[in-house]
Length: 100
Image (cartoon, rainbow, N blue to C red; front, side):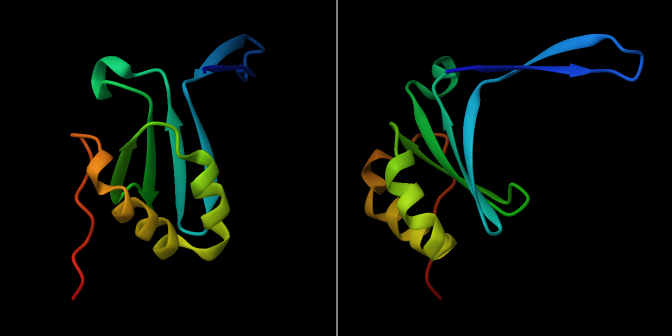
């Protein structure tokens, strides 16, 4: 669901800004839920996003609760969850890194 905010420009003009996804921040990564861009992804999606958008690991559906429980354990715990659900990875998802 979209969230609307009002920002005020230096001129004093209020401008509405709409945010279509919700995010949960981790250290060096975040989780983003998007229920707006279904025409792009085909359904609601939850993305695990590394650092400065270095990787987008996208699962179909709403996985916020599972990720929220794992975020304190760090990115690797969230990536393990993503890999455990790889069968529902979105067609636009990046592939997970391979073990060395």
